[in-house]
Image (cartoon, rainbow, N blue to C red; front, side, top):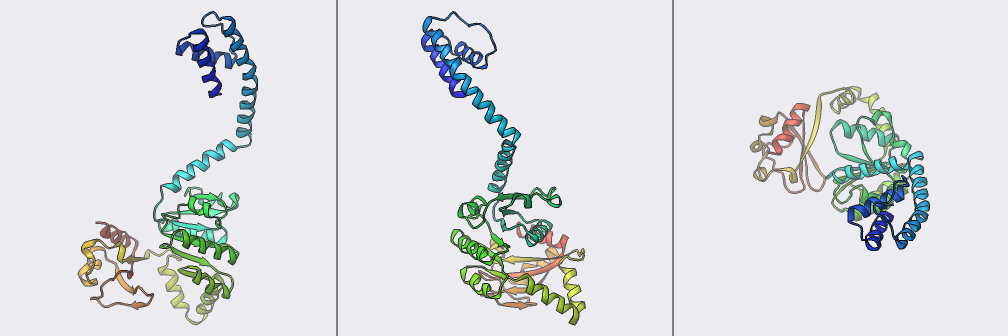
Length: 322
């Protein structure tokens, strides 16, 4: 449509010496078939040119209307607008989490990420899974596609992501995603779900930071409820499963302001500044020290595990961003 308007205006300016405004106006009223008369008398060449435009316009307008009607009636135009909106939303994310799979486990993961204010984007092949009433208000960023494909992970911003969780039902798909994600972003944290015990070692070798077997965790949880019910209930309480106000926060060495690096727990004054308590020290090689000494110092790759109320956790985040 735009092309035929430009061609028509250019032809009238060349053949009839019309001004730009008159040529555009004449071209538009000819294509729109509104029935107005000529702006200025046409020569024989001009009449032939305008006649050719009218004949050509019949096909162009018919095709344009048919295409537009298809997109509107079939919902394609709104679908494309929604896809563009999601692309813009995903492109704005940084250091976010990519969640592959939005089944039962994926929805539970999303719920917890939302509760803790974490930025994330969901990938699933089936769009109907992503349109859930329980997440309508959250306006979750999502991509409809196969997470095993490189281009889909790139669309989810894997180069800028801080972590990836793959919770698909097939261990081979999870393995493929782990390999691909590790290749595209070697520094990111990768957490994978596994169904079979033999898949755990393969996923770890492929680059997964942690491999979770839901059935194993569920069995351990139920058995522990028999032997240590009080301990399990307390753990559920502090992990917000029973509407607790208690939360955990991990302080990585890379998150510390320059002036706090090299300082001990005592010198950092975390309890004085925010109210949180340091209950664990994770060393770079993965070993944990429970209730670390007040003189403990974070080294590159280390992190402190802190516990406190939600207001205290928020105060800690503010303190570290000073």
